[in-house]
Image 1 (tube, rainbow, N blue to C red):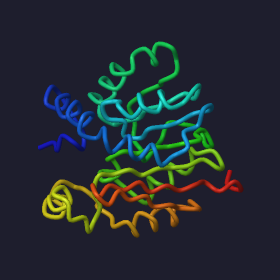
Image 2: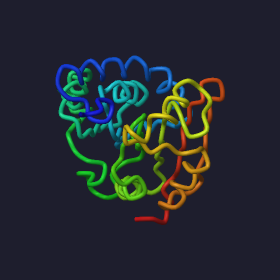
Image 3: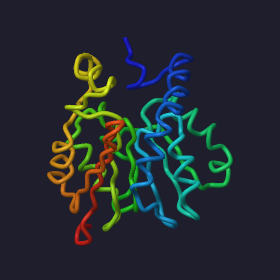
Image 4: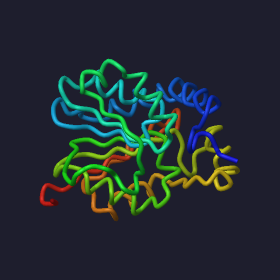
Length: 210
């Protein structure tokens, strides 16, 4: 049986995506507040889901193009629908694909975000290296999640007991840092909202990396 948050499908998947858009709103606003949003260039949201993060990135940037990628066809449809004006204007470009084989040239993006999605990446360490490949030198990558290993919040307890069966990889804050550093990111920062037990791990691509 498909675990809908991992790959939403059909009418049930569409309902899940709409709930996720609403439920993750506070997390996304908080996490994007930790970042300097590029005003030009290109931004990528990996695992874009229903497209709410794409909309917020568009609103926060004066002229950057915002790309969205998701391997769920239903997610791509809904994200395009939610950002239809920007899609029509060429400011938002949303397509289906896999984080393991990003369909973009090396050095393309000044910022990459991943909201509540890296839990399900098929090869987490390798996929983070693939994100690094498509980033411009000096660009930043933000892994954003509303729980982490060791969290005592209700969601953290649920994940602790059910995450393995759902195919989720759950990291501690220190493991988030290690994941980014081992992929080659520098100046890694961990932002924690201790009240909600949210995490935003941010790494930078070194200026010397091609």
